[in-house]
Length: 536
Image 1: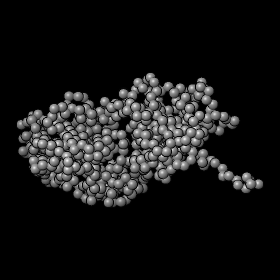
Image 2 (image 1 turned 90 degrees about the vertical axis):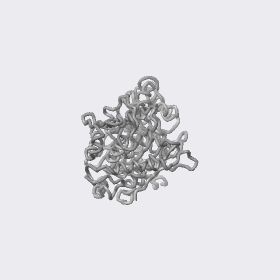
Image 3 (image 1 turned 60 degrees about the vertical axis):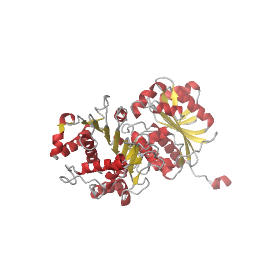
Image 4 (image 1 turned 45 degrees about the horizontal axis):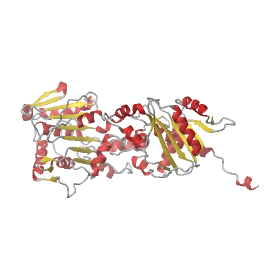
């Protein structure tokens, strides 16, 4: 059976499920079930809503605050191929010419690309064409993916993130399809701030989960499940984060239409492929089991990563490793510090240029975001003055760390390292490259970003997490970087972290992998103590 996670209204809430609300929800359900399925499962038959779909509709339209619908935002999150396109199209029509229609309403279905927007519009258009009464009521304009209700002058338009971020909307209803795949929150923010003086605005999101805990989709789900705001409804269908892929009970938890119009064999085939090919597992867990998993590796879910969060500060004078991942001069730079002893306790440090905090917050988190500044004010991110990260700032901080701790070595990506080495010379910090005879000072270990060096580094990171031999402080910048990390696999099964394929910054993931990789390499190179020689 599908398992739903949702919040309940407390008895003390002024929001109530009223008789008027029940009649309203029932009217929407009856309207939808008079429609005809235009394609796919049940084609040509009346639209038969499944229990989970009726439950979602009732959760939206039944709760009232006085005489008005209380719910303003509704989130339905489930695995792919569980009928979201059909449900979106049906709700659109209920608001365009059905029981929820208003005069001069504006209805938008939003998608991340034009192709997906076209699919939703096509499904709704076919529904209209199959119903003579609706065809009389609605003018279809396929060239602009638009429908116009003749009696009310209400308009429905399918828009995409590629062309839909201009202002000028005054929506009465927005339904966002697969928000989790949005590269930024620009379109979401434009629509969310456009409702204006509408009496009963409604923003619906129907999507799988995002693997990024900082993504707007994750924030909406977490907020909705908290139950703090009765104007928000969230229904989440997801497999348990630590489940086995082959556990069919978990398949049902994420796929409420499984055995109905969600094809069982199609899902089983995808699961079997992921079991045979570990590189497929993160994608399958996210899209078909609706888990909020990191894409760094198949074994590591967000639950695994966050299970390693804890308060375990490093002690002054303790033996540690460092790992440095420099960005371009205008982006994120990461330095990890980790204990030599088990468990490896991580102390993360990040830098960002002051002049790019606002611009890059909008770029990475959506227009109007101040995420980088908020992180800086909370102490999770250091600010480098000006428009670029000054290498002197990084070099001085590393020098300070060599005084605070006993540093066994620093792994580094060769990118722009000469800028740091020049600063080391200028400030008088002695350093030498690993393997250099007679070297003194800070041991520097160049760490390639290809399969040869990064493969063992990712393995070491995974092992430390799975065996709970790593403790990190839950720094949100590092959490975000880990969720963004994408691993590329070569034919031999070796992996590397791929910045080009990652949607957002992964500098922290790269640096923590390098640190664990160097730590594991040094342990492997340590010679066993010859007890006999010591005692003669």
